[in-house]
Length: 104
Image (tube, rainbow, N blue to C red):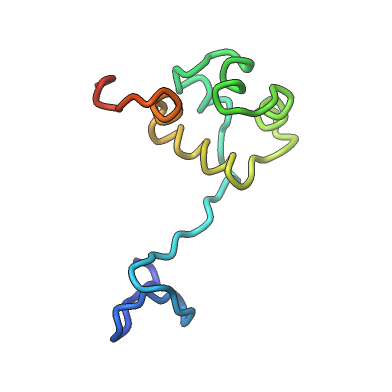
């Protein structure tokens, strides 16, 4: 796990920093090479900026700034975009209470 190990008590540690037992260290996502436009177009959630922005709960202006490189998504928005990149149905299914298996 890249520098993460269990000590004798079963606590997970990372680089000497002690963690709670059973709670893994999760690195902050890196958004430096995130292509928001490609995620939007590949997601099938909404091909237009407006429908995609509405689906993820951000203003269209924010989405445009991300796509044009004027701003980078951070925090929860970055995590959400990474999830959408991995599984485009995650937003729809979570919002509507559906399951991914219904789309397979």
